[in-house]
Structures are given as structure tokens and as C-alpha cells.
Length: 388
Image 1 (cartoon, rainbow, N blue to C red):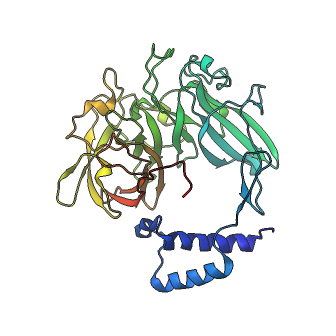
Image 2 (image 1 turned 90 degrees about the horizontal axis):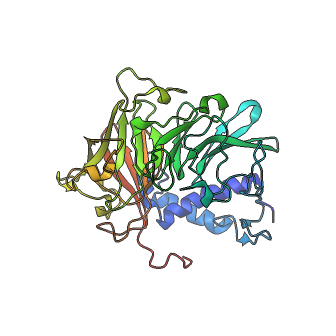
């Protein structure tokens, strides 16, 4: 059975209503511009769902064993580690991770792919090639590649090499990619010749802009995950994925007179601006030590920001520079996205290292009100390997 565009649009709308009605992410109904279903709307959606069916149908096994899809859908492999090759002839690196798409020249689509490769290059069969002029640390195996797709033609090249554990990052309002190193390795550790744990900027359109990679040390050195830029105020918000103790949410405030744009981040001094970690309070003014304490969607915390003493973590990890009563912590602070005038922030799970266990939280930070609101809370699945 084929799937028409009209079917796709109808089923997409119904699926959205079905999710809201099922309540799995019902808390999103409180988010700005979120889907919310009233009783009347719910009745109509249920009737439509019964008539047309919700979803796209059962998955059809893929003979290649890569991606099972419903009838009417197809996929195409763009890059494949160890199989497809870069323009320079080397194989596509392994461990694809965070990525973003950009509009390229002459109708092309550009993708920047992180390659989450940690430690020495010898540990990996397909590290990011050490392309001349694009290498930060020749001992490191990670980095980013840029993929150009235009009218069926695919080309791939190195955007940055010699970085480590490139996990997440984020797009910028001026059209570049910020890639984060999820590591705290210093020179002399794990074979590295330079300190790691930084944010680097990769320009998907201008290869020359990526030469002589320079870390954005003003954003701090720690186990980076995601980063978003407030397009109005210029603040950068950054998540940290770490434990023992749990990681932090950071805010970087630009120095007076600084204006964002292509190539501007590399001009910053290492101590430019102010890097701070968040500190939350409940409605009664009581300090909140860990975001896992929130057990009800709609929970709102007030947020203060505390200066980071040593953002480059010369002797002590940034998150360990604070006492337990100074900052709020959270386990697995990972994805972020800027939208609706603020930052959506994911804490993907919490286990024994947190006060309360959960299988995922989505928060919304409102910079105007300086509030953090819990939008989604997933209960603990006792057996993640089991269906349902």
C-alpha cells in the first residue's frame, strides 16, 4: 500500500492528537505553541482516528537489516563508516553522533556530522583523517565531517580533526555548527597532547574558516553536550553530561560590546565574558539540589546563576569547584533546542547517582522570567529491553 502526501499529512496530524490524548507527553500541552486537546477536540480526534487509523502502519522488515519502515517510505544511505569515502580518499569516520543540516549553495543540503571517538587514534579503525590545516591535536581521533547532498550527488570532507569525543553541540543563528567534546582529558592523559573538553566552531560553507582550529575556551572546559545561543541576548547555554557529582547547566554572558557572527567566537579571549552555573529554588524559596527532585510536570523553579571560579578547570573539574549547596545538579544533561523564546533542555535519565530516579525529563528555561519549568517526565522503565 502506497502512502500519498495527503495520507501523510492526515496521519501526522492524527498522530500528534493521539500522542496528546494518550498522555505520554501531555505536559507539552503547557508549553508555548504546544498541541493541546480539549474534551471536544479529543472526541473529534478519536472519531477521526478510528476512521483513518493513527500512525503509518506496521514496519516492514528491511532485507538489508538497516532500517525497517512502513509501506510507502524509503531511505537512502548517505555516508557509511568504512564504506563510503571522503573527497580525499579516506573512509568515512565511524561513530556518527550529533548532526545538523544547513542550506548550501545552488540548492545543496549541508550536514555537519560529529564523530564521537575518544582516546588515541590507534583505538579506532576509522578515525577522522588528519587533514592538513584542520587539526587541533594530532593524537585525538574525533572531529566532524561535512556532507554535501545536491541532486543525488554526495560529497564529504573533514570540517575539523584532532578533537575528542564529539558528542553533541548545536547550530548558531549565523549558520555554523558548535561541536562539543564530551571529555575532560588533559595533555598527557589517554595519549592526548593538548587539553580537551572544549567547544569548537565548524563552518559548513566556508572551508577556509575552519583552518587552524581554536577552542572557544570562554565557554569552559568540561564534558560538553549541547549548546544553544539566545539570538536576542547573545547568551550561550551549555549542558554537561557527567556524574560523581552530577553535571551542571551553564550560561555564558558575552562581554560588553561583543556581537556574534561568523568567525567572531575565535576572537574571544580565553576568559571573555562570564561563565556561570545554575542554582534553582522552588516556589517556597527552598534550594533545589538536583533536578530529579521534581516529580510532577508543571513544576516551576526560579533560577539564579553562580560564577564559575576556574572555567578552564586547570586543577579541579568545573562541576567539582562548587559545594553541594551552591549549585543545582542533574544527571545526563544532554540535548537542547532554542525555541519559543527560551531553551528546551533534556535530562535523559537519572539512576542511583541521583536523589530520585526517572527515565527522562524535558525542561524549558525562560530567560525573561528566569524560570525553569518541567514539561515532560518519564517514569522508570524496569526493563528497557522489553517492548512497551
